[in-house]
Image 1 (cartoon, rainbow, N blue to C red):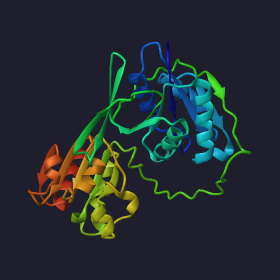
Image 2: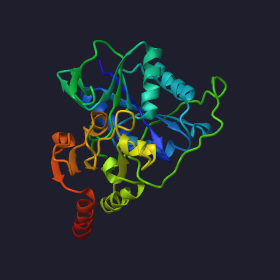
Image 3: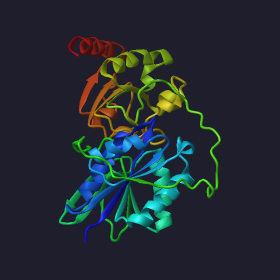
Image 4: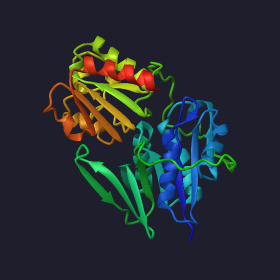
Length: 323
């Protein structure tokens, strides 16, 4: 019998996040040819985004569109997911492994008394036996795990499962979900966001990170210039943040953000295990450090032993020339 797989899409700034399309692909990889992949879209003024989800292979698209959902609301999101689950009885529900997904997925799993596998980086489907891969122990071990019974709750790490090809000719079959305004335990009065105008680290394809080796707040300037040339974002190790060189919003690592860009350039970062936990899944890692014995070189694909203040400007100059 055909099964239904549900993807809970996520928006930011009025746009769908890339991880939503990756979650659709994850659902398709987990399903059989005759199964259905549906999506749930929650937010404010987001109905027009449904066709984008359909283009990547999800249909129907369930939509809860209300002004009070401009920001994430745990109660309302949970009720929306529960309502669609009652309708579809899905075999599995997929989320992005984002701040929203990490909060919402366990709530859904608890409500359904279902099992959950988090931070999935790869999926193998062999004759209906679906195996999920995720990193453990700061990336030092890899676990392959399967569910013994449905429903499944799964969160997908960003930038690991490539989204499929979009077909703009696909049109969404829209199903409206009513907003439960009279049955919420909490009301969000205001959300204050810190805006920097910079690329979100979790979405960046290229990240230039600095550690204690930058020596000061001004030491991040060469990194900013290189990031601007490459269209990337600037991150930092906890050591650089603790030293007061930069804001903690830039921190990458076990107690900061987990990122998986296509290119990660570590400048003046020794490579403590806590930092590696946040970036070891990067596709290509380039390390720049004066210490040839720095642990970062053990995980790097390419390494440059040298002073970052000499190497980074040379890289910036060369990339400006060729790009």
